[in-house]
Length: 388
Picture 1 (cartoon, helix red, strand yellow):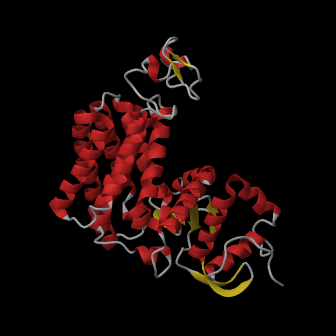
Picture 2 (cartoon, one colour):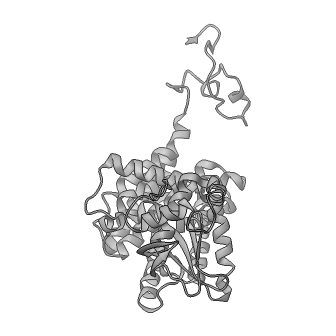
Picture 3 (tube, helix red, strand yellow):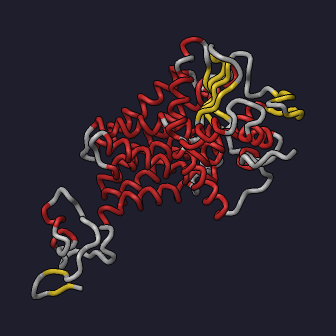
């Protein structure tokens, strides 16, 4: 309700538009005290604030129509998507910025996927999608530089863009696992990357919206190059079913997967740091079973799961199958057993370790261990009471 005599609304805006501007602190002024030339139908979000969100959504939708292109046609399609999304976010200047960043991120993704495919033929079991540690570090650095250039072109600071893109790429080993890498969960991965990029930007002093755009672009265009280099997807096999789930089922499963990985992130970070400590001593890094996997770890024995990271000591491999695992007579795959623990972490987050210890710790009587065994045998990973 607007009173033209007072030049004010008679209902307070439910949100402060911008705490850094004096006009935004007057809850009755609306749209920075310029209500006769601008509109704010809901009172919650201005078009300027909504632009990055719309741009990311458009990029996600258009990606679905570019999956059939290969080679130079794929590069042109991704550049067009970047230009369209950039134009929505920032007009003509944003279009140039979006096209440039899309081509750049796509090129980086293509180059490193070629290296990964080469490693797969020569040295399996190396970093991430078969990148060596040095290659992964170079990929993170190049993504950071691309994000910094993108931020500078948009009028921001190089450091904020660098941090957003590099942080998103560092998180890619977990983001790429959302939906087990299936193409139908690409939207979930892009949204997760946007959250990570925006959060990193906010923490380092930049703007959340700018960081979210950088993170989303890095994930969308680099992963498109990687998927096309893999010559098609294996979604049904990765999902463990013979049929594609419905859209509603994919959305709910993906949303729960994202939330679970964020909930388990503190434990994942600890496990990753511990696992990386073994890399200089011969430990290798791979990606599977819903986790970052550290194999040939020089200390300890067996395997241990922390969040979405699993450490396998020397002599133990995720491909091993054993009988008598925690007293279970069935022949069970160790990697699937540990995958069951990652899902338990995603359900309980920081509460998992206390609950695990209270249930008996590393012992056959622990219901969490028995549930992981049941999962490896094709059952549920939830720790129901063990049957007599």
